[in-house]
Length: 476
Image 1 (cartoon, rainbow, N blue to C red):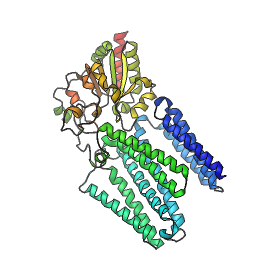
Image 2 (image 1 turned 90 degrees about the horizontal axis):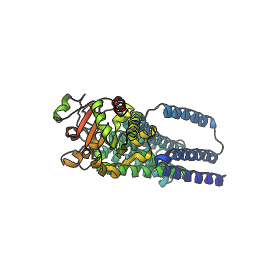
Image 3 (image 1 turned 135 degrees about the horizontal axis):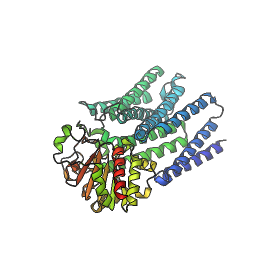
Image 4 (image 1 turned 30 degrees about the vertical axis):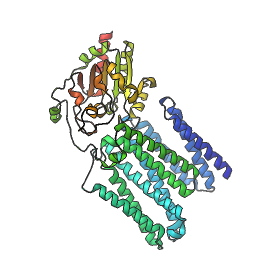
């Protein structure tokens, strides 16, 4: 039986690796998801076989309930809410690791009235507390990230004097309590209390680590929390001596860290700056092409879909830059319709995808894939940035910070040095946006003042629908 379990685990591991590889390409992502799902099913089956005689009542109930919740979320959650769903799933992963580690702790120590120093080996106990720490931080940190993305918590950094000092004190307190429980305490009752203190402090640490981070850095936070959930699972795997859990956790942890590094590089910022910088703490708002942001845009020009359609009709090189505003308006299908019409009229249409566009890594790719935009039309920043100077029209759909010239031209700007799409080099630039309000970085966008830029104020879906109608009138 042990040999059978080992073989199934090996097969599941291979499928996980192949699935992860396929997820790196839009065309193969669906198959990659299927492979990974199959691998998880095999891993669960092998684990149940390895456990031997168990009561399947709660297991079946959990499978039914979890499957129902997953099916509902998969069909009901809109693409605009996908970042929140990813954040909450990260939290569930961390919470699961926390619960497993805590139950192992109670079963092998407190339930048998033994101190940790004699109940378990030292390496097992240390790994167990690591699982508790990382799982707790992931759980509460992800809940805060969910609240920020969902609007339940302010997207602005929530800072107070001594924030980082308090975090440092929490880390010292967690480490001190762990050392005491693992190496010195001989009283099971005291050990139980200390363990609860470690869990409580770890949960508080998770909250305080994420609340100071602004909305502009949410893609990085999601990637990092995803990595945390994997590390927590790997630590739990070492506690349970489960190779499959170690492999899965290591894959998630490593891929999450790599993605976090990619996101930081795309923003030209260090991870420490993201976590402790309080980026985007200037609160600013605007409305309808005016309001208190108007002072920052003395030369802004706006036009209507009819005027824009005349320029699009003669354009032969068009680059579309999608942003979160596109997702909010659910305008991906209208975008595809406009692109098809332009192609039919003889234009070459491409999409410029910034690594941190949207509110999670790959958000724009998934959104455009939903409307069947060919993958060949999607280009990363490095692939297309030099082509804007040859473009007749750059169409910005709800993007802001990733097309802000201040990143390259204003050394005093908070986003200076961040790689951005050089849309201003195009002959004509159209920005579809509800208002002049700032993006996640909470700073004005100098692009709006450029002579070759025109604003199309309104909901992206409505503006694009009107633009398609006007363009059809001209083309036909």
